[in-house]
Image (cartoon, rainbow, N blue to C red; front, side, top):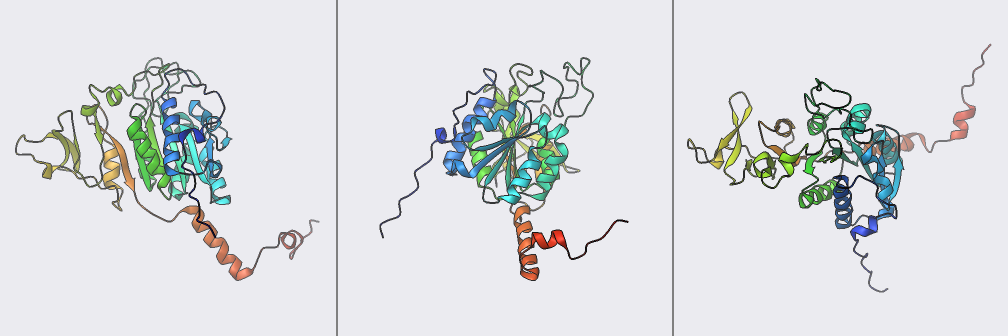
Length: 342
């Protein structure tokens, strides 16, 4: 018997379909598509083992542009479709591409239940804080006071925090990245691909037509170091152009921004990130750090292991089979307890 040949290394273009990509020129979705293909090639997952599921919105064109299996579902129902698919075909790598409107408005209920069950699916939520496909209406993540065609006098809604919702649902993997930081993004998506369980990734994505510059503080090279905080497991929360600012806990479990070297403050006084902590308390606290009062964290908030829903379902099925034998559909249909309506 000859030597076993190694599988050929995958390239990003192996995951690219022959469909013309039809997003607006300059849209952040192009960067997400590019880095997703790159991350999958690094992970080495065969395209024929991957399924992308989407709902409705600009983000939901994603399955057309991937040379994988794909399902373009109905508005907000991508997590539900992905859940059924993963239970039926657990050997497949199932991904959800959704937006802040599709995933958190009409699809909010499906999203939280998919996350809390810890199905082994990966959710990429494109957050541009606007409804882009339907031409610029306020979305669940739009900031307070946002003026849009549906809120001409300013939104009076409190915006949802996608990562905070995921942490609140006890997600086993939660991360945030930015469309204009491709190196960071590909690393996050690669880690999501490797995670066993629900991996939820929020991606700050610019809509240059209807909400241009919504995340400029996190993308502009001149200021982003002072307004974002890159999370690193086991390291203190330090940020700033000069790496001289940090986050510590004040009284009452309240975070505060401090300057290292002032008033005797050292790195030892700062919070240390622990993405492996069993309790989601610290991860949730970090999701509440919001610009402009705080730098907004990017990176992995939480990465722990827990039993997946589909594995538990199949274990349960096997236990029943051992006790009762293989199911007989015909026997179920014809008996043993017929009844008559008089």
